Amino acid sequence: MYAKCGCTEDARELFDNTSERDVVSWNAMIAGYAQNGLGKDALALYEQMKQEGMQPNNVTVVFLLKACTSLAALEKGKQLHSEIIKRGFESDVVVGSTLVNMYAKCGCTEDARELFDNMSERDVVSWTGMIAGYAQNGLGKEALALFEQMQREGTKPNEVTYTSVLSACAHSGLVDQGRYFFDSMCKNHGVTPTKEHYACMVDLLGRAGCLADAELFINKMPIQPNSVVWMTLLGAARNHGHAEIGRRAFDRVVKLETKNAAPYALLSNIYAAAGKKDELAKIRNQMKEAGVKRIPGCSWIEVDNQLHAFVVGDATHPQSKEIQAELDRLVGLMKMEGYKPNLSFVLDDVEDEEKENAFCGHSEKQAIAFGLINTSFGTPIRIKKNLRVCGDCHNATKIISKIVGRDISVMDANRYHHFKDGFCSCGDYW
DNA sequence: CTAGGGTTAG
Image 1 (tube, rainbow, N blue to C red):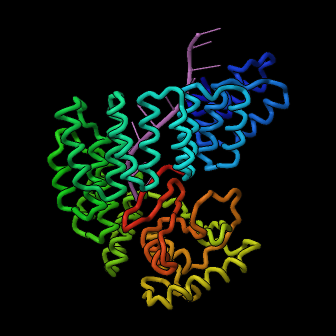
Image 2: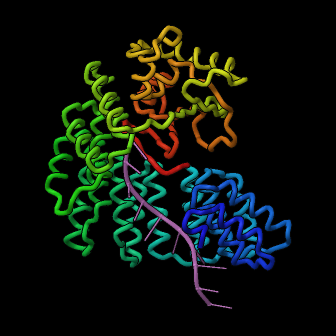
Image 3: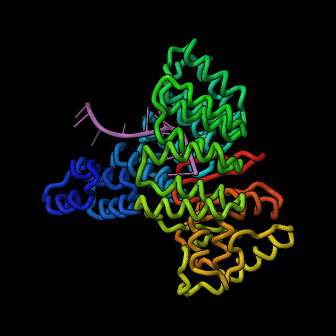
């Protein structure tokens, strides 16, 4: 009960003081960790569980898999998979769906699909999970093909399925298909669009650069648009450098979410990219007046399977020299590419205030510019390409993608992005 | 024989 409410510490105390613990108590505690973003603790507790001779059941492994998914701990997930086979939990629909999800979210869509095809039983959740897996990895066509197959085989899509389908269209630039599915969902399948569906449509239109359409779409919504919808538009305005629409979306978000720093960061990005220093300063002031605090930015970069994290302002890390060398190399590449540094690109002699400005519009290039310092980062997340950049990373990704001449994948504190053909697919990753 | 799986945004 405590664990479900997010009070994992209280739950743990109670758990530790319970003399007779059965599988259900262990499951509840592991679930508490896994569902509150404490994947590592969940996995650690499982080690303890095994040491104490307690046998996991099919419910235990579902939570453990969820922990692996949130940590993108693919190797651990694979170990669990073999344990699932050994213990005979494989045929459980829920376990199967969770496994498929784990593989897909770790970027292994092919493995996920093979598992999915071999499942003895599939329900609407299994189908939706696999479709979402494709969507999150930018495989829009595969997602839509599976959606067709699902219907052919007689499973009726529900509102979550449609959310995944629309997200697949958005992440793959399938604008017309997305519009079609949105319409047919209402007319032919009796699914009333929710705010999630509207957010997907705004994302779809916004990503494709149809910002005016996206704004019009919001203004015609029959339900009250929430902050997520406006944030989606603001994000799209940032990505396409549209200051006017960005400003309008920003004003809406700030009214709905007074303490969120994200809209300030996004609007700052727009103004910084457009060189509007006056506007940038105004936003900073407005943020101060509203008492909104910036969450320190953290960016990661992976080069040849080595993952490094960067935190603004931390110059004391022992590995800072090696990282600095790697950053210098990347900066050199950028310059060769004819990239023109803006704002405070030059690291050593920036004023503190400039740093603040840039931090407001924190982006990877600015992170690099500040010589943000590495802290080595535990388990590298599996990725097919050997270079990754993370952070509030849109601009940086474009640049670095161009430099290395191929698609790259990106992560920030919460999301995994894969850039392909100018579109970015995002999924939860952290 | 209860628990457990899929969705949106930056």
